Length: 505
Image (cartoon, rainbow, N blue to C red; front, top):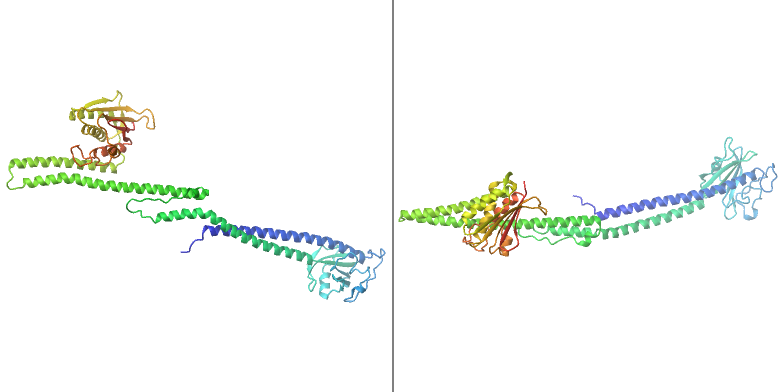
């Protein structure tokens, strides 16, 4: 595949092309303007010289009487300065500059003409030059022709030529050389070309340096992205330390947008990878804990089953073993039910919505908890108005039962458990239903407070069941509350206080 050109090269080429285009346009306009100006100056002198030549040819020149015919005699082909023609001669007449050509025609036939060089030597015209000059004679009723450029060839080159007709019928053609115009415009063209080339070279160098500096932050952004691609992201804990530096973000608006977007992307990726690693760790721990929880009752069941299968086992022992197997089976069934409930909540982030009066639901749960824990003091503050929410009544009852069971199991006898139900009147959750379950027991250790809603989290670090439960109750409570669009948290203070907030119906 063809490798694309770099942005730096493209910008440098575009900038150089613009400089070249501007240089060409400016140079062409300058050369043409100067050429037109100098050509206008030559035409002004040509008109004056043509008028003087016509006056001399018509008998109105210096030393001539009006109406008289000048005495014109052809001179030699080349005469030295000492034999310069007289002043009535139209070739080399006073006021004419060096190189001025004057030719007189009568009835279309050349009579006399020539030109004086810069060295004062008079030169005759060739037949071809006479023929070219004859084409510039006025025709018809016109007494003059506009100046035009004619290439007379030979050593003369380009001339500006104009024709006049005298009252006596003679035709006079006057021509001035364009050598000075050509030389000046040629020199200006050369200067413009050299300056243009120099400007293009300088533009190339300046654009290359400027773009190199301007794209340096973008290259560092690319290096940052390349460094991230080299980090293995498929397994284990991943830390993406590479970030676009603040100086690069502040360099230009475009690079800043790209750099800031890349930093945000890396933050999101790092958070997602951290969540993935945490989820995988939680899953591994969950599988290990679930395996341990299921292995213990299974081991007990197998042991009592083997004891019951002995040939010398008595009927009374077999019935006792069967009872113990049933107890362990019930425990294992309860654990499996809790695991299935968590799986269902994970698969269904939103549950069916029915109108539930939390006030009645809490009252029933507290009455059941009072029967299960008569050695605790149970206090209800439910208010007089119904507290309606949308959700699943059985799941919400499970949340309240778990919170009350947690307070009963993890506090000593005589502990007061207070259940309060009210409406949130301030803050972001205004209008929500708030359930608070608090006790004046020993409270939660800091380590447990941070992980109380984790699956298989217990107040005791050991796997002993003396504290009761499997460690899934609070995890189920959080999953149910979040599935209902609410929140559950541990509030600071003495004892243990759990606050559940649910959107009101």
